[in-house]
Image 1 (spheres, rainbow, N blue to C red):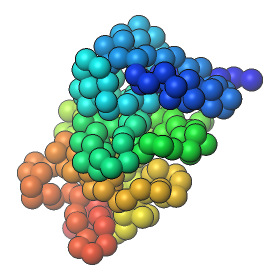
Image 2 (cartoon, one colour):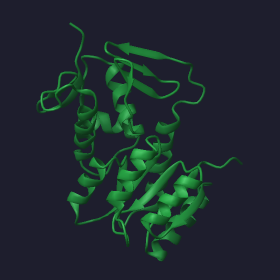
Image 3 (tube, rainbow, N blue to C red):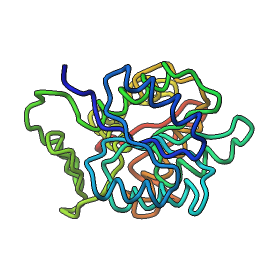
Length: 232
C-alpha cells in the first residue's frame, strides 16, 4: 500500500507527539517528529515533507515564527496549527501567518486525520486533472501546475488560498456564504467558527488587490459572505 503522505509533527510534549504519531501511522502516513521549532525547520529543509502539524507553544522560536518561515520558504507545504482551547486569538494569528487550518486541544485524532487528508487533496489537486488555464484579466490560474499570476507576475498562494481563488474565479458573480466556502474548500463540516474564512480572505486581498482596504475583485456581500466580481 502506498503511503498517504509525509507528515512532520512539531510538538514539545512527548505524550501528545506520540499520540498523534500512532494515529497518523495507522492512517498510513510516514511520520517524522521534532520537539523544537528549529529542529522542525531543519527537517523540512532536508526532507520532503508534505504537511506540518505545528504546536504554537514551543521552546526557542514559537509556532508562529516557524509557520511564517515555512510559508516564506515552502509556499505549498500544508500547515495545521495546534492551539489551546481558550486562546482564540492564537488561531487568528496562526492563520494570518499562513496556516491552512487549526486544531484545538484536546482533539479527536480521527478529525485530525480527516483534516490532513482534506488539506493534502487541496495541495495535490485532483488526480489526473488535465492542464487547464483560467483567465480573468489580469489574472491567470494554471490549475494543473497550481500557479497563479497577476499581469504575468507570479503570486505565491497557500494551498487553501489557491482553492478559494479557484472557487471564486470559476464562479464570478456568485455569492458564497462562509459555510459554503468552508464546505467546498475545506471539504468537511468544519467544527470551528467562520473566522478561518475571513482571515484567508484578508490574506488573499493583501496579495491580489491593488488596494486591499478597498477590494475590487473579492467583494464582501454584507450579511452573507463573499463573491468574485463579475465582468462588466
